Image (cartoon, rainbow, N blue to C red; front, side, top):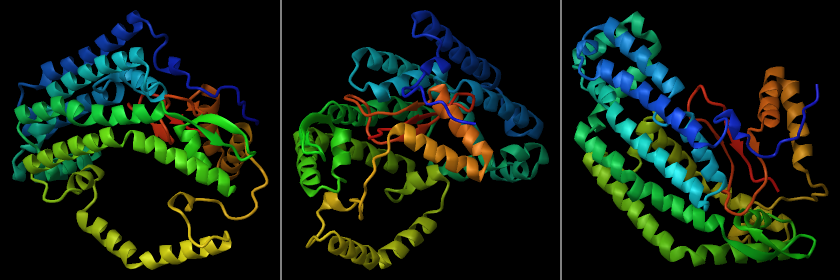
Length: 378
């Protein structure tokens, strides 16, 4: 069975039928109702902190909420995706910010549940972890019990939730938006001068044509330098907020919060870092060999990913899809079916453009929502 390659932009009607005030408000109301139904039922109860049967009921309710609604629902994911494509669109940003306010409000009002679970007495924690009725939630509970020592009071958590957007998220979004709207004239591999956005210029730094890649690298650095002063302020703001939060939570090292979030022991990360550091000479020898093969004295920083060998074909998006689709199908038809759904349903946004986020990602929000892929295919 062939794959139809007709859509190259996201079809967000899979999340929201239309971007009208009516549909947005209906979705917001559904999200709020689900959250506050849970809060009304469980906030003032304590039986689930001692009874496995009650805890099972509470966790089932919590899982349904997290599965279908979360803190912003389909409409929150819709505006987040829109913003990734149009970072400098004021209307999209306004819609995103309204949903972000709802997100923070619900997150603050729902957090009592996790905080209370974290405060369960150790002897009851051990009992709950042995209960077969709670088997599906065992790891979820283990993580909460293990990380409870890093949780703050309800009031302190609310303050951090409210301030994080201004101290972190908005700074990061600002720099991302500034870079996304930047354009420079570059030299294409065919020797033509043309204006391109940052992501497309970045791809040219991997060109096999040295003149093209060196000129592209110069333009990349120009864009970065134009934003360097404000980026420095951004980094200082983000790091100051992180340092404060780490101190409040009692994280002894800067990367500990990441390890806690990723559910991995710091000792494992340290062992990996030590192993890689001990073998830095491999990377050095690799790049020395690559420079020699490319006929260069040394590689410039932007040349580290330049392909070696004669590349005599460019792959269009359509050709790329068919190659990968055939490969997936040859491994397991279910892989091919999954990819077919992404491509044919309009869940892949393909080409770079001014204002669009750089790089690539595969993003989801709720388990009940469709998953979307962002590319910058050149």
